[in-house]
Amino acid sequence: MSEGPLDPILEHLCQQWIQPAFESWLLAEQGILDTEPKWKHLLACLGNPDLEDHYSQLFKRLSSSRERWQYLKDNLSRKQVMECMFQYLYPHLDVNVTKGLNHLLKAPFSLHPSTGRVCVPLDIQTCDEFNPLSVPTVKEMKEEYSKLAAFRDLDTVHFFEDALDLFRQFIQRIKNDP
Image (tube, rainbow, N blue to C red; front, side):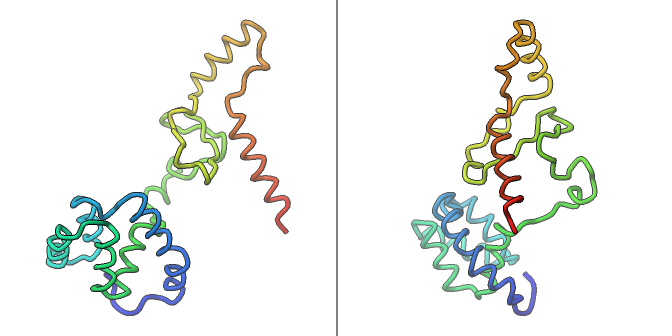
């Protein structure tokens, strides 16, 4: 953990966004302190093996993620608590992501270089339900297109109807944004 006070901007960000998201998504929905392997992962954020062991033993006597989290908030400094939350919810960049072109975010409807699947835009409201294997590969699209072309039924080709609608809505919001 870093020394010194937390930057006021990060403090504000934590209070407004990180802490509410952490407590609703990670504690309540994902139960990140429900089991020993999960809480050991979080305790590793403390960077002190003695503290990790101490809290891990105490956590065995507490029955829920919420109780364990409250115990940490009551016994760690505000800065330590915030740094644990930031470890889970603040974006991290991988060195390879920033230097390798094949790791960059893909433009909508471009092809993923290793899977051959088409990159489609996601609806943030339903992204948890997204299954990347449901997106067709170029090979699958070609085969389907060939079958339909043989019957002159190309009007039924609708590989990306939902993704196209989502992308059109996104473009429209950009156009309407002053």
